[in-house]
Image (cartoon, one colour):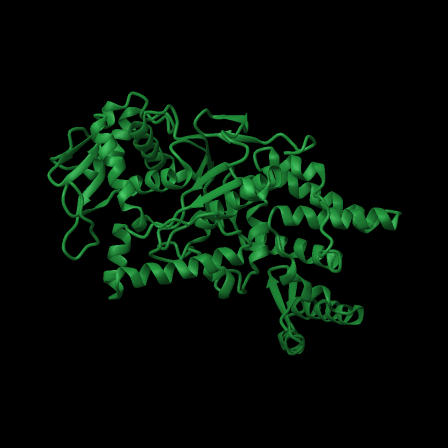
Length: 467
């Protein structure tokens, strides 16, 4: 890491404090993030950790070198939800998980995410899971009962340190899995028997399959070691998933930590409400990219990414059409400014890198982008303008924003743009006068040119070229 690189500070959920990041081995910085359970399309809430930790992956590569960072994001391909969905659709579990994972990979690539260093599948790590269970049993932290193996929560004095939940809350949460073979209310399953129709593997405790929490402990151990640097995921995973991962890994190996830094992104809601299928506001990444179900149009992956980065990752975010429209306009303006410069990436400005290094403060980083954009447009010196454009391009590259999808709008000639702007102004006037026939005529004329309009209660505010 160069001497002028910013000091990376990350908020650690484990300590509830922002801490300077000190990797165990600067030559091999290691990060694990919980990935998808591949039974259905990933929703926009799932996209948040995918984008957030991709930015962190890029920043770590920037600071330590691309060859010195290992990023593991798992694929959960054995789960009760998978079993149920495959049965519902009348297909094999393998067909379901392969098809769903293929769509997931395509969707996150469209969001500008780099492929992780490793994407391990749970079903390929059964041997590691069995080995972990055997270590926990030998250390007195797990027990077999009625074909199951369970973690003995009272055997770990520091259980609950990550989530810091009151004991009665943890017990209440654990009671959803009441069973006569459990010694304690909070004990959780490491291994459970499988019916003939369910996926299963031979083990010392009979044919069965792993508990969800065990899968991540096994995959992180296999690819990152007994202790590693960063573990990330959504805030909803703190309890019980991450709490139980810590318990399993620490008790299997006897270390004081599983990961030194635990990072969690905040919740996402849609248009001011909790996302829910029952409310009709359940939005998938695939829908945003390929249908007109949200805001009446398809959205470029870069627009979705830029919108997601408008709020610092630990804060809640309200996913709205307005947020996407604002991001689309910002990137459209940058595309027009940077076309022809994008192949000459400059070094991101120190202020931009420092903002990202301050616990991924993307909101502050965006402020720096706007400052550079102003210089690139208004500086008296052409050299200063060029340097600002090159630095802008470097900033966007560092946070993974690709402008290619926005260049088509910036390739319009000045006469075409003038005509479109004049036509939109005339159409807004016709709409205000309730002259719907004239409004429709202008819309159709622009559509014939490949110009798609986006209307709201205030009139046409955005447009795009579809050629």
